Image (cartoon, rainbow, N blue to C red; front, top):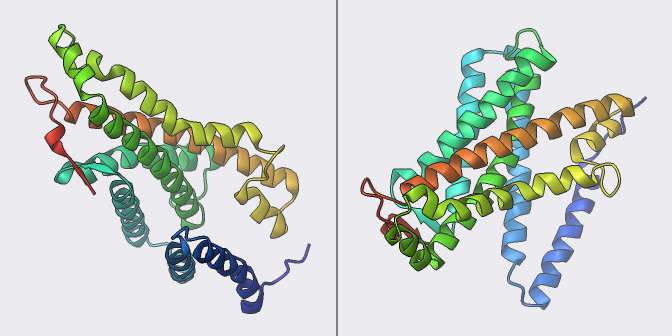
Length: 265
């Protein structure tokens, strides 16, 4: 099956649709036009840059360069999680929670997928490692951001209830357990919804891209299922780690609620 090559003109026509959307935002005073324009510019530049980097990495397959790119991806994703919080943790904890939770979950799940399931030779082959890690980090980032936002906002608004639970003799874990569970549910809802409607309402992006590039549909489906299962587990593990670390940091060593460890944007 021949792959239909896309020209710059083809991409420009697609981008024009987003520009029209930005115009509608301006007319309706939605105040999203600047963000849409910035999103077009950033996505174009970032994807073009990563395309050049991946072309170079695929050719060299140098473990040090691959590890360096993986760490950059992790740090950028962690910063984005922190930047999305209306009430973020003060100091190094703002970034540290994201780095730890995403690093442990995404890197572990990616390693399992490469060494046990896919088994490329060598296991760190960038053609497999970078796309897998990127998809896991991207989706885990969203799950962690939603979970932490839910946790910190509700802890701020329900601080009197939490303090009342502490006064009644509950420890920090019991006092905030209901908020932690709700935050975890919120973080997992997007990936659960995506899995529930896959193949009926939507055709996931990776599967669609593979089919358009000429991959047999059933092979594309198998890879899409693999990715969705990995994303679900990575998001769940990452969100759990982030919410646990975040909720623990909201209390000091004497189990007092410390909302001064949060700051608004």
